[in-house]
Each structure stands twice: as structure tokens, then as C-alpha cells.
Image (cartoon, rainbow, N blue to C red; front, side, top):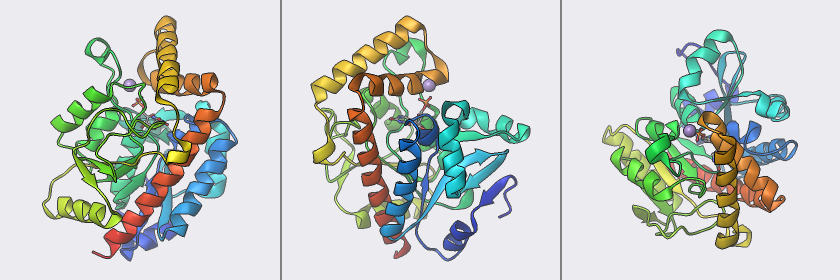
Length: 305
Ligand code: PSU
Ligand code: MN
């Protein structure tokens, strides 16, 4: 690889060179999104699911100032144990952490960036960042949306949590020219629930069609990401009213405490988990598994085009 500071794990580099399916995974979900040891167990299981569906996993992070595309199980364990002590690294953090030789857990934005540098086209996660409620005064809009507007990676997620203003998030993505696809659904899923009352741009029913859309976007030279929203499996979806009440309570607490900036998302995620007493964690884990499977199937379909 000619890109400075980038280390692509040999197994991943070989798969990319041979045009074999590869799926990127983020690491903020490990360090900040879930507690230890469930975070490490989940991260390792997600890699297994990707392999079982015919692709090579590449979990992405910054370690000792190196951009890593593909981690060893020991590196995943390290990030999981460090938890919130690791810097949550979005686009603005990247050059500083590399220059300082520091560690960083990559968000959706930086995972997309490093995946793209390595030549990986598919990325599976849980939920993306977006436009926060009240953003018209706080201007809190995740850098994930800007990255989706410019970096050529397809991101498979379960929508976004209602900690965000989902309507404004869709408006922002429209402005940035990001197609929002619903996998076997017309409705935007809201992470814990399969519906949000909002429509996606297009319904797509197969991994083959997702792969074809991705290939077409590349062939047309249209730079930017594609967002695939995959509803949480029915068996694990939560009651919308109950989870929204919890989210409202978490947002009220964040406001009362004056939480802002990069702390907002991790604070809200932790609060929701605390109030729901673990139910939300199980839902979170299951939807990530579901997204990993779809991303691997899509990567496999893409490799055949
Ligand atoms: N939403 C979730 N789980 C997560 C995140 C968001 O449901 O783990 C993480 C992702 O890494 C995402 C980041 O990219 O938070 C967004 O943070 P911010 O809103 O500060 O950009
Ligand atoms: Mn933010």
C-alpha cells in the first residue's frame, strides 16, 4: 500500500488484491458503544458472521498512530478493555492522533475514510450519527453525514437512533446526495424499532441489487456513500413508545448536565442502556449481527459483478 500511515492486515490486503469480498467494521461501537466484555464478544462474533457469509472482515481503528484496516483478536480485546479511555476519533481527530502516535476508535466517518484508503467498498455497523434534536440551535450534526456525502463506501446500518432528529437527518442526506435505501422495507428503521414513520428513498430487496447500485455509482464516477438501512429482526425489536420515552429522558438529562460536542452521542447511548437495564444492549448486538450478514452478502454479490 502506498498510502502513508496505513497498515492493511495481510489477509485483507490479499482479498482486496484478488477482488474478493471484504467488509469493514468500526471500533467506536466497541470502545464507546457497548460495555466490556460484551463489546469484545460482539466484535469477534461479527467477524465470524462475515466469514460465514463469504467475506473477509476488516475491523478498523487507529493504533499507535497507524491507521489499521483489519485487527487481530488481541487488538480488538485491547480496544474493548480500554473502552472510553480510547479517543473517539472522527474526521477532525485523524491527523492529530496519527502525528502523536496515539490510539483512536473510529466512528462511521473515519471508518469510511480508512476503508476507502484501503480499497474496501462495504462497511457494516449499528447506527450512524446524524442531525441531533435541537440542531437548529446547537448545530450538532455528526461528521458521519459529511463523510457519507463524499466517500465512496456503502454503509449498512439499522437506521439511526431516535436520539437524533431523523427527519432532519434525511434532509441532510438528501442535500449531500446520499441515496438512503431500505432493505426489504419502504420505511426508515430507527435502530431499536423497525419503523420511524419516515420513508426511505428506495426499497431494495436483495443483496444483488444493493451490489448493482454500488457498482453503478462507481461506474458513473459519482463520489459519495450509499446508506443501506436494514431493520432490526422482528424478534429483537423493541416497543417504540417505551424506547422513545427512555430516549426523551436521556436527552433531558444530557441537557440538564450541559453535555455537548463529541460527548453527546456516547452519553445518550450509555444512558439509554442504563435505563433499559440491558434490553437495549441485546437488541443492539442482534441488529449488528444482522447488518454484518447483509453487508457480507452484498460484498459477495459485488465480487461477482
Ligand atoms: N450511534 C449508535 N451507536 C454508536 C454510534 C452512534 O447507535 O456506536 C457511534 C458511531 O461510531 C458513530 C458515532 O459514527 O457514534 C457518531 O458520533 P457523533 O454523533 O459524535 O458524530
Ligand atoms: Mn456531534
